[in-house]
Image (tube, rainbow over all chains, first blue to last red; front, side, top):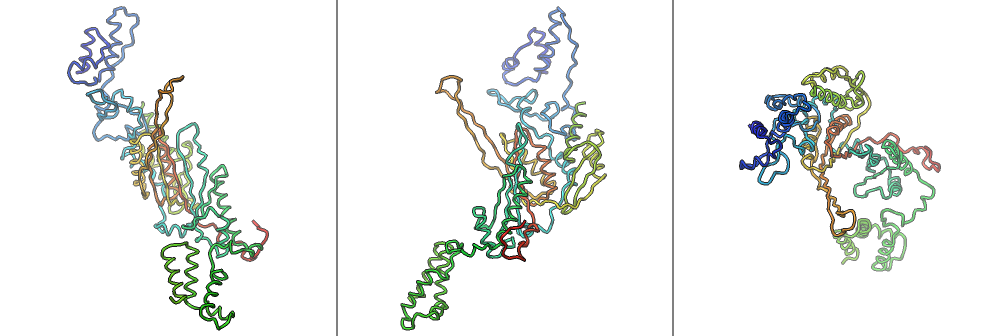
Length: 334
Length: 204
């Protein structure tokens, strides 16, 4: 119907009528679909009308009905769009509209619509296509071992975690230099370390150790390839482990300031409490070693020792201060 | 004619999916079961176009040679796929595609969420010369989508990531964070100076 109206316009002798103007007069603004037919018949019509016949173009055959009219409802869509392809309005039987609408109108239709061509479409990835692809890819997949269902079991059997990143983006180069970085995380409790080795290891790794989670993190980025960084990280772990088991000669000079934890034995707190107790009650017994040992063996002195150790190691908190208060009260029999 | 060409392209791309290296020459598909590594070398598909060539050609190829290698497979505790793009609708569709693929391949999905978008704004001079008071402002919006997968083997991860990455739309970037797990290596199980407790010279 629209094509017929445009052909009647040709007979009136005007080719390039803005169809918008024509449609406005009909009261409802719409975009006509016959723009291409109009221009193509215009080309044919020009030599005929002019009568000069300077050159006769080869007659161009009419574009038939687009494929959308002949598509059955139960067709195989994966055959229409098997791979990523731009939007073809003649192949998609949907009345899609996209674009900013004219004032008082609707968005433009799909024929000749650049917005629909510009945006990436997922027509080749319909659920049916995804299912087909996954069926084809299934033989190459492996199952997760059933014995490692929970995270705790994974941590128990595979304590070393290696983290690396991969980047996919378009640009002048496909490579991303940040892809070489490797993070190695391991819990020190899963390594075979004794007390001295553990303390020495913590001193050696310093900043890379997280006290709350007991995790050592080694980040390597000094080599250009990820495989090299992984090898270097494993080498560092091996060296740290073996070095921490060694006992050097100069380690015997470890002072109180180097100690990681507070220990109450031979500390000013022990001396003070013993002096106070000796002066307080057992003034007549003398100041012998066995008296000190006897005092140390008492339960309230042991409670005092626990509370002071807890205060120094864990820091000050409500419960630790209360515990200290109770212990002091017990020692002085208040 | 065009449909034939389209199908051949799809054949090549699907072959690339399956081969990963090249699609020319004779084939041997090796597939692992259980804990062993998948070794995909090459694939040769007969170039006979048909409407459902996905199924017909591949069943014949899959039955041809599937071998199992003894190399141990890597185990990934977590795989985080972060996609970035300028268009939220495109990322929505991609998220649907990625999650459906994970479900079809039997991969356990973790969280699928949308981190907040970043907007980078610039204020530039509108004119090439003078007119300092007249500026123009641009902004670039980057939307994100994050998909977490748990407990995935190396073979499955390779297949899934290659499929996902080949179908990444234009204008979308991806960042994959892999967390692999490993046993404690043999040389760290016991200290090497157990026989000699105090050693001054470290030996390799």
